[in-house]
Amino acid sequence: MQPNSANKDFQSAGGKQVSCLILLCPSSLRGCSNITDVGVCLLARQCPRLRQLCVLDCSAVGAVALQTVRRCCRHCAIEHNNMTFY
Figure 1: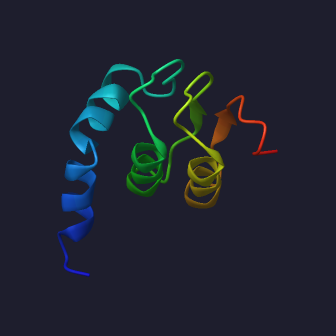
Figure 2: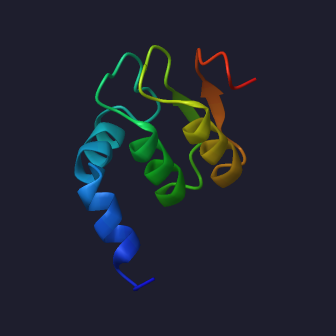
């Protein structure tokens, strides 16, 4: 992996949009239909000190993304309604 490849992946996967969302609303993406597993995984990897994340009613966010948040952001409280992640 090249040194900047993670940043390139972040940018190509909507990283700018995720960054803007975090700046505007640091913990809640509730109801956002544009956020996906890829964006949440990248967010978790880029923000390991994240303390709270609300992805209620985000239909494109699945268990894989929530597991990544749990693994990368050990002190993060996750609000979700994904029945496969409990």
